[in-house]
Structure formats: C-alpha cells, structure tokens
Length: 183
Image (cartoon, rainbow, N blue to C red; front, side):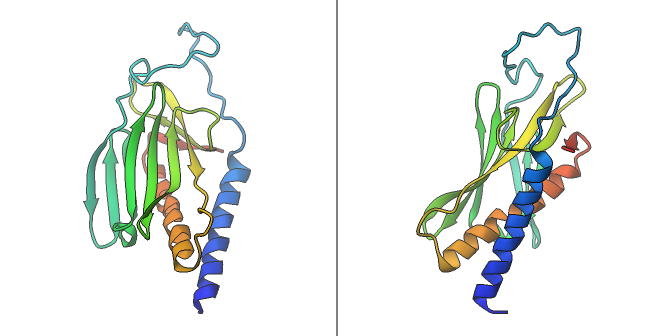
C-alpha cells in the first residue's frame, strides 16, 4: 500500500469515527432531576458540590502495547506507539474539567482532542460518568482539534493517526462500569 493510499485510508477512518459520534451523539442527554434537591435554573454545580474530586492525572504507565493514564475520574489507555508524541493535561475550571490531548509534531504542540467532564452541551456527547454513590452524574463529551493550515505529508498523517487514539481512549472508558455511553 502506498504512502498516499495509507494517508487517505487513515483520513477516511477518522472521518467515519467522527461522523458516527456526531450522528449518534448530537442530542442532549436528559437526566432526571432529584426532586429533593433544591436547584435553580442556570445554576452550575462546582466539583465540590457534586462530591467530585478535582480532575488530576495520578499515574502514567507504559508497556509494549499501551500507555495507561490513571486520573481521579478513572483510567484510560491509548497505543504506546504514540507515547513519544502525545501529552495529556488535566485542566480544572469552575464546574468543569477537561483532559487535553496534544501531539508534538515537528516541534509544534497541536491539539488533538479534548475530553470534557461536566460541560453540558459542549462537543459531541459521549455519555455520563458517576464518580461515586454520593456524586451527581456528569456529562462527558469530546471536541476534536483541527489540523493546522500548512500541515501536510507525514506531519498530517501523524496528526490524523494520533487523533485516532481517541478510539482506544473511548473503548477503555467504556470498560468503566461508572461510565454510561450516550444512546
């Protein structure tokens, strides 16, 4: 298979994944409110009010096949073939938390995708996560970064392949019984 054919195949596979998530995850997930909880329309719970810990990366382990990242919200994995170029950063906002996945491609840090926790309506809905029996259920979504203008050839192929690690990350998230996939 030629290099151009591989690049096209990788691009088509990524498009299929993004299209599948967009088609299946565009509706808002409605979760029934607890009638005993006094809420205001438009109020935003902070992680402390939700009994949710701050999102932090606690461990990163690598073997011959996987990089496994343990966070305060659970563990996920992606192919160790990308261990030298992918970095994962936890970012805490007032009521929301994000995991930023970036790739170092030719010395440039490029956003691959962002997994968002408790940012209802942002990105493509993936499902919900309940951290503990005492914690509220939080929405989980993903937003994909765009390839920068001027990225071409091997650099573009590397970007696309690195962005496809999302498939492994989502598969490993689905193995957590506390995560419920969007319908």
